[in-house]
Amino acid sequence: MKIADLKNKTVAAAVSGGLDSCTIVRWLTDNGVNVVCFTADLGQPDEPDLSEVQKRLLACGAKEAVIVEGKDKMAEAGCLAIQAQALYEGEYWNTTGIGRHVLVSAVLPEMRKRGISILIHGATGRGNDQVRFQLITNMLEPSFEVYAPWRDETFINTFGGRKEMIDFCVSRGLPIKHTHDKPYSTDANVLGLTHEAGKLEYLNVPAMFIEPEMGVMPTEAPNEKESFEVTFEAGWPTKINGEKVKPFEAINQANKIGGKHGVGIARHLVENRFVGIKSRGVYEMPGIVLLGKCYEYLLELILDRRARRLFQPLSAYIGEQIYQGYWYDTGSQAAMSAIQSFSDLADGTISVDLYKGQIFFKEAKDAPHNLYSVEDASMEKIGAFSHADSEGFLRILGVSAKNLASKKQINVKMFKDK
Image 1: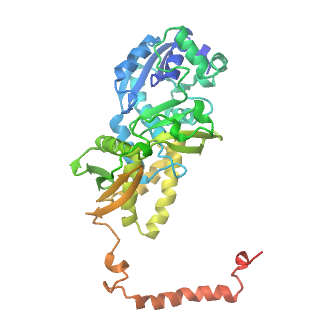
Image 2: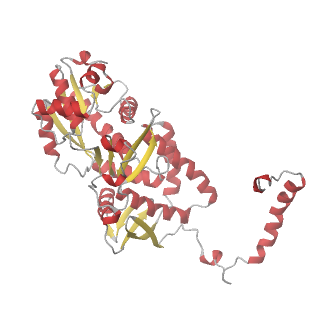
Image 3: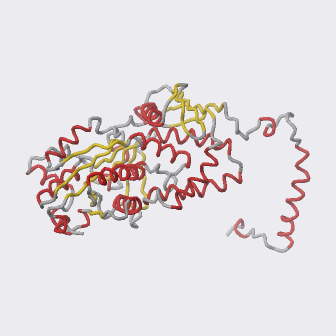
């Protein structure tokens, strides 16, 4: 689909109100397209007043600027990711990936109400978001079409990058917040901020180059530790420091407390994008890092080694599925259903100490499915497990070990001096 195919048509634009959004809305309008903008309230900390976003989009030529609710779903999705420990490549909590799933699922019903069947997004042709917008739309509303200006040569030839977009907006008096001096871009929701592009594309620029918005750098955190306590019921955080909370409140409070101590701030990651290239991002995600670590401590108590062997590949699989835009597909739903068996057992209260960006285990209590037993594990003379009982166990294990040796299957060459 090209820009010429959209003339005189009404389209829906999923936009945040930033530089790309303002540029694309005005460019589409200049080319005879009727644009209805949709911005989801995902609890983004960098836009506390979304009515200002509406004003910017209308000033850029939008026929209508609609705010759709999404922050509660965003928090619930974040809690599900915590239950699955669904990090991408072991480090990234999928904050933006989760946001795209929630955003598109919130916008599509509003499009149906208005009889709009073409979704516009501002994701580039080099990134993951274009895949997410496309696949999520295809799965949830297969009859809808998706148009990406950054894959249209007419748009690409007009705007080579951020400099040209800023010049375009300034020349038309559009109310953008970006300037040539801002050295990187930011995408935000309640789960975290993603900083990338600009100077952050260069590996000689440190992660601490960013100006944090969800907390402070660990070096600037208080010199005194602070305790944090969270109670989980069937995998869901229901109390923070003894006070009852719903998922959004849990994430929000964890953001404030974790951010105050530099938890999850300025995390540098070079990750493998779905399109096959590596990208560098610097992340702020204090709340999900804090709650995620507490949940990990709880899982250590309730998963035995066989359950852990199943949980870990499911966790990695779900993390990759979310990253690539497949949360709603059959495989992800099956994997999440399996994770639910473990989540049902995740009852308990975990206390940690926060200090200079670090999370230290403090206490676990009220966990009825906890498999850890002081009596069984102790080196003291307590409990029913006798040290001598292991004699027969080791003899059985030794049978196969000795057999390997007798059949010359043991390789010790790697330990010899060369």
